[in-house]
Image (tube, rainbow, N blue to C red):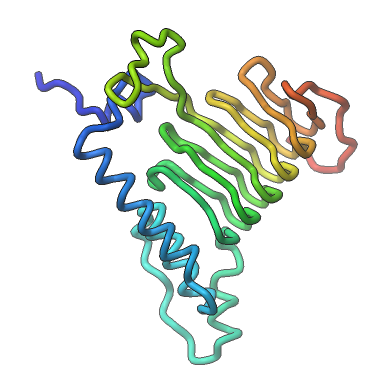
Length: 213
């Protein structure tokens, strides 16, 4: 039986080595895809969606282009809207639902999958860190040592204020709001339809809504 690759171990949340040729190349590919997206200037909505899919390695074909620019833009109204600049490690581990809005200067450290539900909104400078390092410095060993990670799951219809940080292994339930500047840790997952804020984030109150879980 063959040994798992470093990429396979990374995706499973096991200790893995990031500075191997395959993963170095994967990060470089994503870096240049992000650079193209971030420096795109005035381009069509179609082109923005195409460049975002290049970042995330989404091979879904675009619909046939329409002659009317407004009608063509309307084809992509349910696609995620991501404001440049954005920084991402690998891209293939970032999954954004329909109608997600990501404001500028957001960072995705997507060692493990980062999943964001439909219609969720991010303020500027939101940071999602699914990767982490061993606490033991002898094991950590700089770029020669192993890393690990845990998935991040954010439900539908959430709102993360500006400068929110989400750490590995966190789950944020549907319809939740995270106050600006908060740090959400694995110590406190956020249940659906609740407000959380602070460092570390704590549950403040339930949100009154007609929406169901």
